[in-house]
Image (cartoon, rainbow, N blue to C red; front, side, top):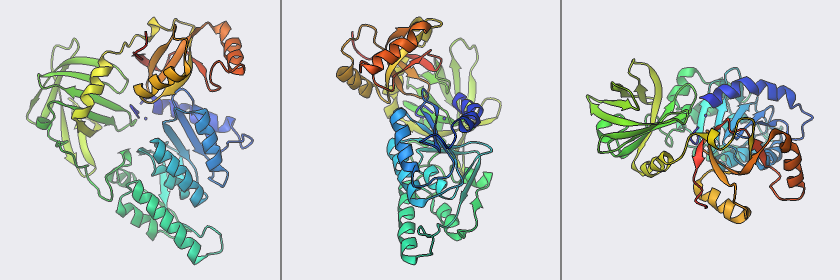
Length: 405
């Protein structure tokens, strides 16, 4: 997810079941699993009990670039779920329930904490049961107060909270596909206690107001984001969800935005349409594929920075070699700080943009026969962090200038 969930979702669908079966309950961190370290994808696949928050912290330590949490859980202990949810919100993780998976009862408290929330599988809610198992009214009231406070922090619509409170603890209310759309569970979290499109100084459904701003859209099928910088001189920079950058021109006419990118000879027009679930984005063939998330002038600087990034990773990582990555950081400033504090030898320093938006910091490349010996020996003597790894660059989309000679 630019920050964010297309190719990554496909990957998760194909490898999730394999990881669950391979990482059994004998794993000390089960049911918390590492799905893809390089992409920052982790999962909770099983019941949430008193041990799960600690296991979650251990996995976060092993995957410091975690950005996506996949959920497949029947529920469990309320306060364990609230503890994990607080960490999910604090770290800005996105939460995802895959098709043919479920997130029920206490699991939903973790799901709703996600910065971006996608529920393709079953999402079920109900009243909480007494935490001590004896029907204590006082304990139940305290637990309910904690739940309501958390859901309010997570901007869960009041109508959805009401559905939860009306469903007895021995029953479960599974949201229908229409309700997921209505409550904004196929994209970014909705605004506090209200439905409909978010408020914004710019009208998200009126492209006449978009000039001089960056439009952020999100693919409905995958949750991955794209960006379109619409400069006032009629030029544009379009970053596709795949990470590809294209440049060209645009014009606005009859509530449409028409683009001519790269070597295209004709303009392709797209149209935003306001609906109860947000602003829908229709392509030139009339297909609904995305929702408009934001229109923001402040993002122009970020897009300009990305234009200067090289996207030919193969120039730096030869076929068969791998880049020794010693850290991943969310922002350029955080990456620079890590280098200043931890990398005295910068002769072979490189920064690579991963397709999840993070910056991978590499101190050089290794041949296949060097990897095990070098990485293990350097970890043992403390020359590189214990969570360092070697990447072929398959998931890098470009080079980032870290600002060091």
